[in-house]
Image (cartoon, rainbow, N blue to C red):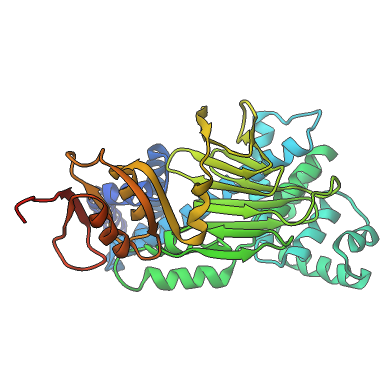
Length: 446
């Protein structure tokens, strides 16, 4: 009897400790998610999920010395899974758009299907691409090993090794295999290609980012900086140019993150944040997939050679310098064809802006900003992209017009040149390049 009452007391004490932890940290954790997600509702839901996990493990509470660190660790795992699920859903929709099915699964069937695909992705995502692809072609699309060898450009014996390696990773996937066996062949193909388009989940990148987590200031500050699944990254103030697997050229603007998914059936560039310029290689072959840039709002398909795509806070901006680009909304809506010399901005609800494009808009690729009678507020926002701290404008000067060419890789030089072009002065609390700047009208008595 004494033992039972003691156990009840301990459970009650743990519940009280959980309630205290929840009340003290729930707002902080919701804010942590909100800074990394565009939807406050999703952020709050994920924060609640973290505390559900904590409640299930509340016996560990007395030993947790740093609750925020523990919560952030759990939050990180949920956030990675959230992005992975979003990626899978988008890849599935893209695959469905490319290969329409006569029989669309019901909402209940789709829910089971997605959970099964997520489970399969968890088993396969650390495997090399060819191993994963061989397994999917065999298990979901029903292809023979000889045909898989031809498609992947490897020997039959290598395909057998791929299959053995993948099956070893999926030993515990029996229940999921049963679910997949119940869907029709069309849906199996769509599912296979959606999974094949998913980027590989790098254990090395995960461990690296966890090291950042427990390092210096800011729990999980490294998530945005490293974007675990990103293949190409540029730092603040850095402009990079890379060659893509098909020979195309991609230039990353300051603070940009990109994932790549290039296969025999697709050339997908996933723009996580920032801005990119793409120069496609050679002449398009009708038998070859065309490069596609995916953003949060939809897909920009190259029908030409030179264009840029920018992921803004709530929209995607496209600028076409040569030939054409076709915009396709993420789920539903009107497609748009943009020609050379045109720019447009798209939100989830459709077209936001459409207009003509100035040729000097591509100057950022060369590290230059060509301002042609732009407002000082616009100028400050553009230069701030390349500076560690923001440039702000006093209301009295924000509509002043700026013209000239300014270096993007040297924002302090650009600020000095601005003072030669306009009667403005800089106010800084600290005389450091990393400190914020306020632009005000120059005192004529000076």
